[in-house]
Length: 216
Image (cartoon, rainbow, N blue to C red; front, side):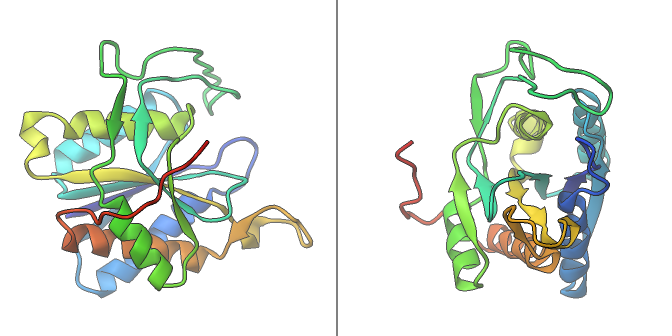
């Protein structure tokens, strides 16, 4: 079982490309014979984490990939690190705006993704889909969900049977006004990119040793 999650719209947008891309990836992967469920998370601190935990407990997936929007980026970002910090620049969809609060009190400072991010990067490049390994998932609801996911997967009951991580996607080019210069990507490419990451995670128990770091 594979679980893919995206987010509802936030920040005044009428749609969220993370959810569009997840639905496309689900259909691509189901057509290949994979058992895949898709879940739309609320863009709300706390509530998003609770919905994710419930789905993990109910579905017992072997692979969980959460997806969110990173407006301003022009490629898929394979997130490497989730940090134990909620620090909201804007309120969430329920009006919450935590500042310098832990995602999990007494939790570790950070968790690393257990996806083979370097192998996935190489597979995406071969597929002609723009991608990068990102060193920060921010401090908004995306990171909140990413940290929650990795905290759940760190438990002895889950860690032996599941892997997971987070992908940020750009704006969907179809949702931008005509002539907009904002970085974007076609939704179909985002969906195929997520499917590439899923295939790689299922096939690569050990990550490739490639340079994909950052100087700043």
